[in-house]
Image (cartoon, rainbow, N blue to C red; front, side, top):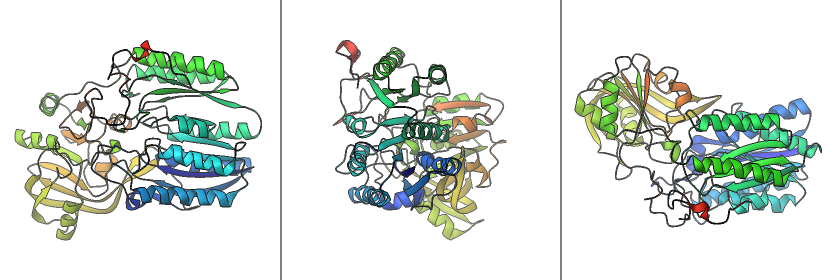
Length: 491
């Protein structure tokens, strides 16, 4: 057997002012054929899992380029087309193959392309023909378009949010692919359109039980090969934005359609109950200061670089400074220029510095302070599950009794190692202020005395009923109350 694998992924917040070019991919992950590191970077898990399975099962694996850019705004057209064509040329050179196993995100948008993954998969299908297996792993915060469904045999999406299971789902993807090529199964993909858009953290109810039940169904029913929820990505202004359920069955398309519909309608019945309650910046600091033991984690959920924002909001920092709170550590505030200034000054220097709030309205005001440069680190990384996430050249500064990490590569706060590599012990801190919606939860919950979710400022379009979409359909909840009054859409 011969398989081709590659990865091309990012998540596009079409409202973000931060555009992506090739340098953004190179800063996060750009691995030419055979050069991917041993650990995966979220959407590149099919490459590393494929390597292991190729050794164990004795098939030939041809690796293409694997590349990932941290979420931001629109992708430069030349960048997308260049990376796409690079991988397609590698696929042509690899022919003949029995299967193509890809790592994609699913929420990519490029200049001139509302659906880059659909374009990419269609071209893959044209190259390999109708009889070669084509499949991909997706992030659930993606868009599931008709074009993608027509081009691929099946998709498997991460089940967990935070995405702690991206390696496990890549294993699922490969197992179905191997079983298909060896003739043990015939995958049929059924999809139900929930006609809604919501946020579905699996670290709390009701989504926790929903995902557990999906996994139980997969284990108990041999007809079910995989079940996935495509959450959708509300900051992606594209025509097919929204939540969908995928059921992959062993040749039982009608059964899969019924399962997908039942699960989808259950999600719809629970709409509006999934997201964790959020406080504003004043309420969040009030609540944190009531807690005697630390560290209290305040998650700045809507200035999350993992959702494509800049990650440079100072709204919570300004609130903490105004209160005179000490013993707080902030990780991170994105400001490459401030990092350069700190690098030039050197460790131990005391300098005047202006930083933060440069990207967009609704992110607070730049902070002016006389700071001490405590620690500098080139090419800093933090842990994220079995992988590492880069946050670029970074500076740890201290002033007014608080510590702030400035970074040059945008990255959300995945793990307490973010603080540790910059010389900050997170455990004795009174407050840890981080930028993430929920990916932080798995690791930070192990050290936090309390977790507070905070909606500070307006860096992210988080209310679909009021978001000024230009392309997204307005016929889903919460734009309309009961979109299922019309005929169900089942693919």
